[in-house]
Length: 323
Ligand code: FO1
Image (cartoon, rainbow, N blue to C red; front, side, top):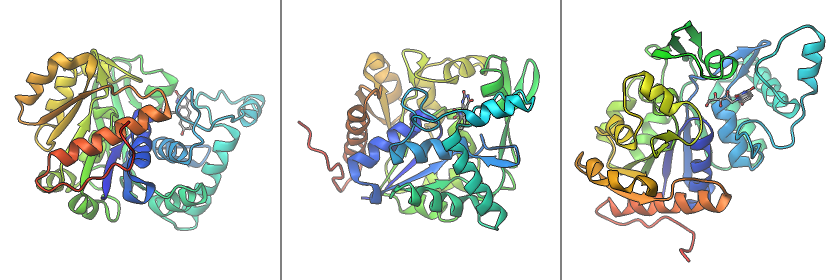
């Protein structure tokens, strides 16, 4: 059983963790958005990659979902003392990741090589693959003018009204090594409950990815990031409204409809099932809200089992018992 997940920030990392618990780390590869990456103090910050890596290593901050549990902010205080007005919080432990990544990148390693080394050293056996080794940067066109992604998201707390999104560099960027082959050979592909526009679309926009998904033999399952018209975390619902799309699980399913075979809908939205089935895909209705590690594992297991029902020859997959 070989599971390939597409993920962005916190929601995606949680389901990736659930899939890892359900099938075992060796069976899981996670392709992670890097269009949120940026440079700060000369360091390459890769927030979504780190969120997935820390989550799978079991050291993510449980409250925020990003950063490291129990981290401290001495470097932040020192930056303030130097007269800097920092708006992006890099914890002291998190800083070690950025220092080592910078050392590896400056020594000629690619982002995917650096990620492999860092995640291995944190004891992560799942394969974490940044979507590209080339720079791609989301530029958010807002009512306050164009904003680099982290300025929109963190500095302005996603309050500016969004008019459009540009994934700068995506046309020239190569998908990460092994990514297209992994899509072709996966047994199951899972689009995690990440923001479709900010986290998943940059991956889909890379050359060849959409076509390979269209031709993939594996069942492709998307899990809703929208429940009851609201995002569980972050700006997905607000962004959808601002882009003229109704913030609803139906619209998320429609967004992916040309290449997915199955959609996981939250039980609070069960009445939307017929509308999604009418798009020609299978629907699993369940509790998609992941508060605890057990919730993640349960959802991971349900997604894997659902995928198995969508293929002609059953492979099984979930290692967890279903008591
Ligand atoms: N998100 C915030 O809202 N404020 C921060 O200061 C912040 C710092 C930060 C540092 C390292 C890291 O890996 C992630 C961090 N995030 C922070 C989260 C991150 O910027 C966003 O959640 C993602 O880019 C969106 O997926």
